[in-house]
Structure formats: structure tokens, C-alpha cells
Length: 111
Image 1 (tube, helix red, strand yellow):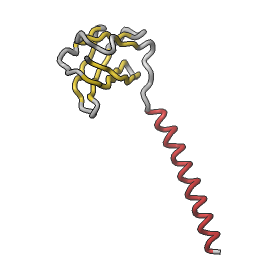
Image 2 (image 1 turned 180 degrees about the vertical axis):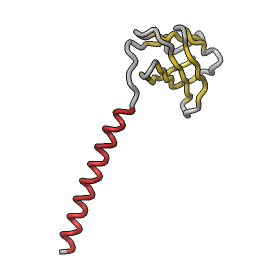
Image 3 (image 1 turned 60 degrees about the horizontal axis):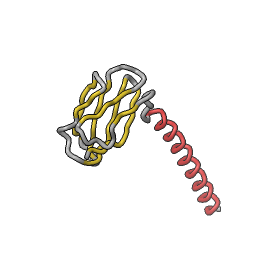
Image 4 (image 1 turned 90 degrees about the vertical axis):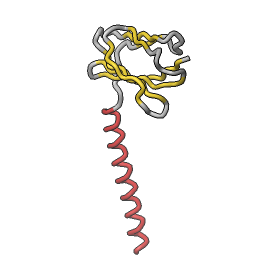
């Protein structure tokens, strides 16, 4: 009899865990980055110290660049298409671009 209660408890625990994780994944999908319509940045890899960021919207863009350890190496508001990154050392970075409520995260390589 005790064995049956144990099995019922295990089944209930598994169901509850699955239910909670399903709700968490729905919540995470609501908080993930939303795409910026028509976003492109070039060149990538960068060798001349400048990148150009464009999208369908002409709005200002908040640009943040992180190294692979997550340390912020640059944060600025971009009012034009051109961003000077000559002060950043060669390596692999993550670039986060925010335009209004939409954000996008991409890999950036600087040679």
C-alpha cells in the first residue's frame, strides 16, 4: 500500500514539474529578443574599424557590445548608420542592438 502512494506521489511530482517547466518556457518566449525588421550590419568580420547598421526603420539604435565573458566593452546610441569600433581589440564579440521595443543579438568578429 505504501508503495502505491509512493508511485502516485512520483507521478504527481513529475506532472507538476512538467507543468511548471512548460509555463516557464512560455514565459521565456515572451521575454526573448524580438527581431528588428530588416536589420543588417556589415562588414562582419570587421577589419577597417567601422560597422554600418541599417534597418527598415530610421530610428535611433542603442548598441551594446560585449566580449565573450559578458563584459560590456562599448555602449552608445547610434543616430546614423556608421559606428566606429576602432578602439576595440581584435576578437569575437556579441553585439546587441535595440531599436524602440525591438532588440536583436548577433555575433561580431573584429580582425
